[in-house]
Image (cartoon, rainbow, N blue to C red):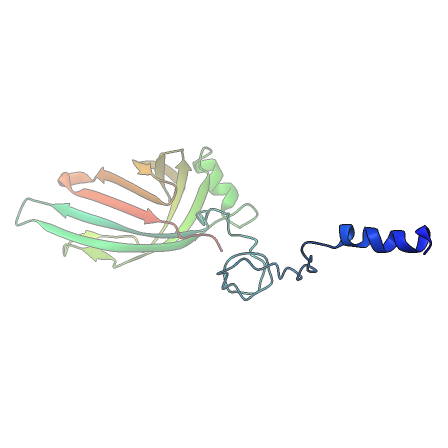
Length: 185
């Protein structure tokens, strides 16, 4: 036999593989235990891309929803509340320039409807009124803007969503007000 013909037979045992490598199975991209059935790349089960998942909600200052509670202790005492609701008056609206003249430092202006028109059987309440707001980081100033006059009504606390304020009327009548803003859509 020739060496060239025998050499491959002699070297063949040295090249026998010890183990066999299998071809890898394709990766599904789904980690074990993942039950997310949508394809938008997040971990919830909806199919839309979550664009606002990390967005903090912000208050909508265009709508005023509030209450004022009137109370006193003398003559048998009384405590009754009114509801206030209204929309912001924005630049370009018919009353905006007049309200800015009454409260140049105000950030927001509102036309409010108030109900009922009387509390404690004798305190008359204006059912239509205007308010101005100056908003600080953690405080607010509430203004009454009626009859062509701007009147500082009260200083209050503000947490970014709710304003709480107090003031006193004639005869020792205490007024506690609160306005809560909803989340902007």
